[in-house]
Image (tube, rainbow, N blue to C red; front, side, top):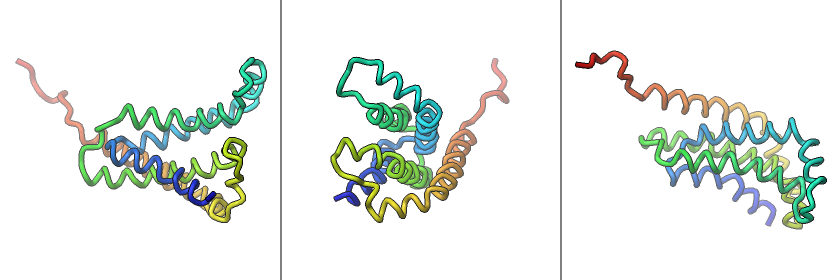
Length: 162
């Protein structure tokens, strides 16, 4: 059961970006931005959640939202931005990297929510071992997709207007 949930977390961004023809490179970068927000402001988030009167809201819920919302919103805002089949298939690489990192980072957070410990899985430990490669490949492929998208546009600066 834990391995199936981890696979769903890994495949979620890839399936979403492929069928929506969204820019998975920007999605990966947005996910990294959400992770950075959690990392840098974790204690502030816990303090803020402690100040609220909402008893069902935990710092894990806020952390999961900060991980998922930038990724999902970026994929939704960039619907149809990947027009060629070649770029569409290449965008699977950063999407899978984002999913892998999502599984590595969110698995311990989902433990309290789902009443299962995903981080006890041997599959999760293997993902944790390749975390560096997920970041490196995801970053390089994301930048490549963003750069390829910007090179494909035609500029109107060279045209003369009458």
